[in-house]
Length: 341
Image (cartoon, rainbow, N blue to C red):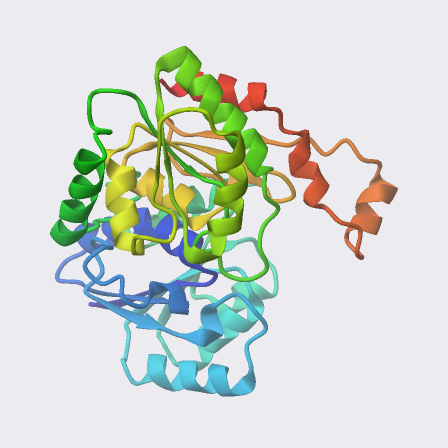
């Protein structure tokens, strides 16, 4: 059976779909599983267990796709002659695209509305459910009983060797608590999410060292350099600065060897969950219930929006919502971290 797991969004959504990917790959007879996703999925073959192939399409990046991108996506999907499409997206345009490709069976989540008319099967969604959990339940529509609830990502042997060199060479793997921190927006697609102040990350690192003897590892892309430098001004503990020095797979291998990962709403947060590293995510305007790391060991610190309905309405038309994440205190994050240790 040729199955397409169709994911719309970015790297966050790709990783959130990995429990579904693994579950279907092992739960049906003689499958060939193709992850059809955004450009962020390109180059991840071999790192996403269960995927036999990956097709990266601009029309699935979560933005308003141009007609040329939609036409290219239609041609690419149609020529592969899938038997089933499992759709990790509620957007009507995406579901219409899959309908027009002629795939006989199209499975998605939602309720009895206009978009579900484009599906052959749907699983009713649950309010506030994490995306990974909601998409995993789609496997039930294919009569798959056993589910892999753990997200999964495999950095590969070369990335693991590089991570070992970096950590052993710096003297960090000496038994101390290792905490990875990403103060920037590493590998985030689209407009940057609201960010916690780098100075607060520094204060958090100082507190973790004072209480638990932790060493801090800083990770991110070149574009995160300014945020890391601001954090370094106030960071007074042993640290290893790897920002901008490693590829995504190599950073994944570093996170895999750490005891804890802390960041805002970013792809690396979900990467940590997929690697089995305890993760604490800080969420302001976005909903940590749906976009938070999936798994019982992980924690979400959600800023409480105590604005009036009128203030919220004005925020939707231009008022800066990034101030919401500033309501999260260092002590709030520290309490969540100590609950995971």
